[in-house]
Length: 208
Image (cartoon, rainbow, N blue to C red; front, side, top):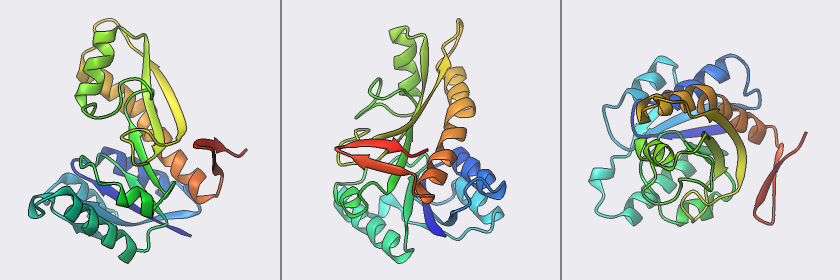
């Protein structure tokens, strides 16, 4: 059974999707063993408590720079014996030490079809604003491994939704979350824990 540590910063809707999937038996080879929040008082911590999952707060505000904070996160992951780390609405960009210490063991979900609308500055509603401004007819979400390059790690799973007339960034964000993010993130976690993801030459493949 692999230990899954989930990093959060806010409401924790993706965390809830993972918890629900685990409770339904959809991640048979993995278990959410700890939730780590970048700030106190967020609803994601309440979700963890309700699910009986241990949690910790490593407050970004208590660290003067990204390096010190990244080191604290790294130490916590080591202490929790993390086999898989999932960034679920974690709004802090960690330095390269973390993905180097956990190569192809950190999952992130990005609310666009990478390589579109990704990289530094593309987060939250900004992604959906950019998609609407570009006039794309399809958007979606991507689950990928985290590398030293922002949103640049190997792509594992992608799913698309239509962009509809009258969509606002908020409406589009909700559609992407409900129809793609909440489904693909638990699926990717299950595939990882079952040993079904392989990475060759920087490209991820899912074994059938």
